[in-house]
Amino acid sequence: MSEEKNKSVDNMEKKLPPQFIPALRGRKVLCRMSDGRPLNAVLAGWNAYEILFDLGNGKKMLIFKHAISSIEFTESEGDRGGPGTFR
Image (cartoon, rainbow, N blue to C red; front, side):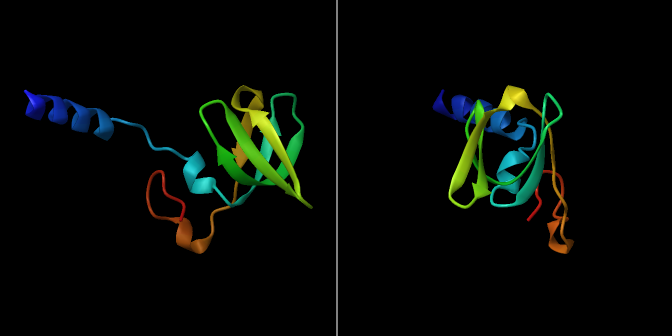
């Protein structure tokens, strides 16, 4: 029975969509807020509900994901590793 449970867990793991935020960690991004304001910062961390941006000069900003409209970034030459990978 434990083998069946392991198979179902493996199948669930394979069906997850690609995660893009982890691939952007430590990179400079342009975050557009829902009200249109731009935020140029380095993506420092995240959890299920929030994203932490490093603004430089020791300043950080914690923003709730629902307040973000889009996150723009530039791919470099070595970033074309396939879906969900940018490094």
